[in-house]
Length: 259
Image (cartoon, rainbow, N blue to C red; front, side, top):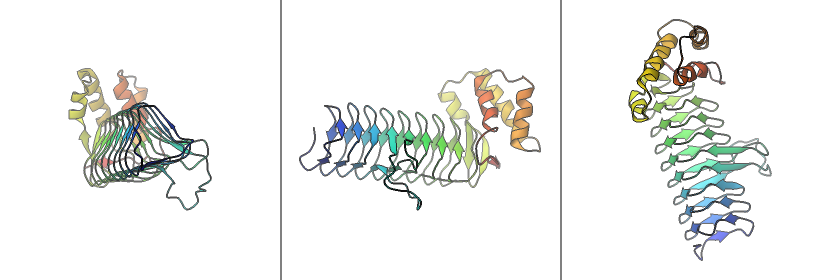
């Protein structure tokens, strides 16, 4: 059902059961999958693609132009929102800066009120951004990460899958998978509660703990220590190896430090 006061561009593609509320705007080339709901006064911008069951709440803007002074608004870039993701009030998700590319938010996510996803970000599945969280451009967030309210994440940072970033933290370095980050670039151990809730096997949790200590309990560069740990062949589980391999990539590779 499309409210009579909504503005839907003729070139937009909406599944038959999409709901569009009063004064909402769906721009040219947007595509909304089955079961999507766009609340009153929300805006889905040009070339945005929403999967099935996506909810866009009041005054949210999906697919807006990047806040980049060098950006050409004529660039044919877009935004992709995965199935069943919920975008709450006043959320902003900006499109990519390069032609043919997309800012991506995965499936089953929750972007709470007032959170911001900048241009060229890539968020995995089941990611939660709490109220007022701000992601700079090109930030990558792994599956099932939780970024708490008021957190500011510098551009090009990575938040590893399963990580938890506590409220009002300032993150300008990469956060490893399944880590607990807080303050300004500090890590306080592993997100053991999250690992337990995801029913990660005890053997994998034990190896992640050993991998964590191999990187953080010794003096030296994190990447070099992680490479040494991998070279021993002592880490058999995917979770532990993923933790160590994380340190070998990225553009802001100092990584958060132990408190």
